[in-house]
Length: 100
Image (cartoon, rainbow, N blue to C red; front, side, top):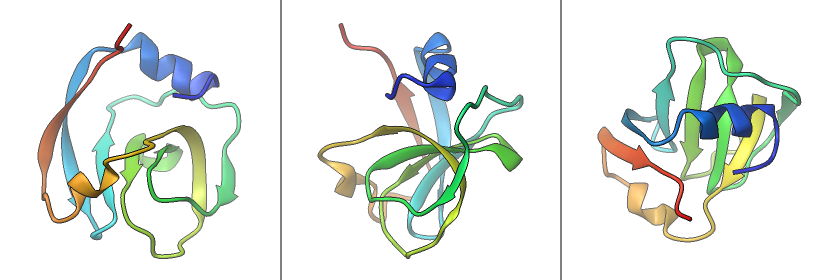
């Protein structure tokens, strides 16, 4: 998780278990009821494995496949390995926690 406003806001909420939706065959998504803080939203592309926040719908997103799309996002982290676990998994609950 990156040291930016959204990353810090997310860390403050940990640990948490989220019901993630598998959307468009490329992303796992959870929509928070309230907005997270942002400080560097940019219209940009993404890399597979990136964790981003999409402000219009308060969406926490794990991008597991590429389609070349660009959109407004705040990048908040990256999964370095094992991202392929999300391929074809469907909707699933995930738990996010800090490991000391």
